[in-house]
Length: 639
Ligand code: SF4
Ligand code: SF4
Image (cartoon, rainbow, N blue to C red; front, side, top):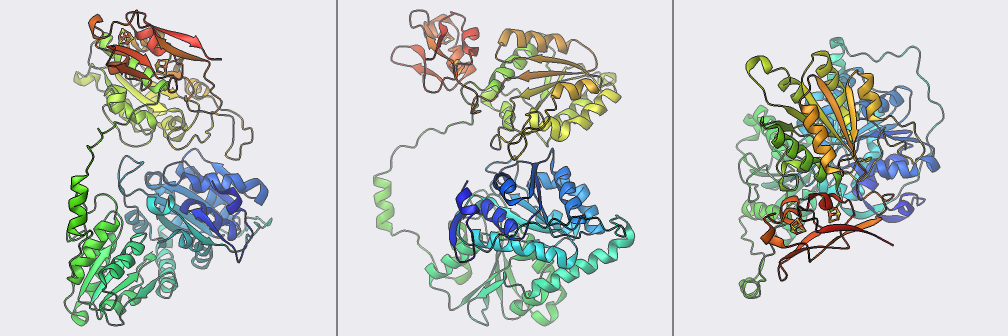
């Protein structure tokens, strides 16, 4: 994190920031008073940056228990006249939508910006989701930056827009903005006001009577979008071939036009204000364009909406060929609307539009590459780290289910423990959906005994997920007397997204002490039986899971051991394989430690036909010591 750059005084200075840091800086230049988020890549660093600056700049920053709560907190600050921001990844907007669609009706007062980071290509998500459809459904103004610098400027402006139209403004970022770094021209930092007050005459209701007002406000945003300086056009005044581009594809498009030498015939319209559509602006370009190429991330949202606009004016506009993801003209190897836009996809699409063949490399260059090609490295599967307690938890759950023998079902959730669905978790997890869904599903399975369903059901969630979305499903399970075992894999952090604190850690977003809320206290307060077990004690864990599977009703097993990568977890031991005892394949263990349990620190020494421990990777968790049938592994103290 570039804290020094974030706190640099402007204007007149230029610094290098990531897109997420640029959004944070834009908010601070707008006089931000309240920031709230739930962590989720690719958006996590926005709140992390704000939290690092909150005390010295005098604003509030918090990790909230989920995205809906974060948005509600930000709305409260707005109702009190302050500027607020809430940040989430695409999946988080689904969680917050119930409140957001209502907030659109009631409107806001102080500027409120909702940052949503989509993840084209699903680099750090379970799915690709284009949140523009949700924004359209909520009638809220939507802006999409194309560069890191624009992310900062647009965030600052979005607060002003929000106050002008009385609505929250949505800012859609994507991974290549969030995690890119670029030069940012700084403006002056603004201190938040100390004048928060709820106007006693103000009312923020959700009622259908406000539907016309919502449409009026959206129209008001559209009017401002028609002349927004964030929208720009470059190319001939009457280009018959037009590229309409949103987001980071803009820089790829400009480069493609230059490389192909078609800047005199192909126009590029960068659309930064994407909902409501700036119709007059678009119609002015559709008036001369006969072929239009759309470049946008994930779904053909803009392509569909602009085609609908054209259809309303077809008589005057005449025939236009529309090319994009919907038409199949913009696609990577996996097909249209799948994966990210890349410079290669864009240049191929612009080349086809311009009728100008593009040869990325000279044939001689490609021939030489073929001649000197190195053998491909084997693919490396996603895996739990050495010493990760989740691997031990899945080992124990799987072993207990095999002992039980009734084909038990393990329902997964969202977090690093989702890897339990893969080889590293022994393919134990059979379903993965949304935050907390494993428990809702388990609650449903737990009521199927009347239909002959006899299989035990285990829901697996992480500690942060427990606070985020599990509690209502647990209440449901208890209320309806569902039979399930909830295993909470508590590693004392929100590990997947970068070790953010949560209500159980006793630490706030700004690093101050916070009253810890233990998972067991919450579960016991619901009247549920709770056990706590260290998953690194393998045999005891298998016994606990097996025993609990034999009991009725809903119960909770907390498998508690800290993430091996937490800075305060110090390695005091490391494993060693005794080469005299390990007899490798000959003992019939099928290389249990290295191939089956598959801790990355356990390496197969093929020359000697023995397992050995990578001393650098080994975290000293000790699970392999319990597992080796030859008692060939021991733990030594680390000085
Ligand atoms: S003790 Fe064994 S299982 Fe644990 S990290 Fe070291 S090698 Fe891996
Ligand atoms: S489980 Fe024990 S005997 Fe088997 S390969 Fe590992 S160290 Fe050797």
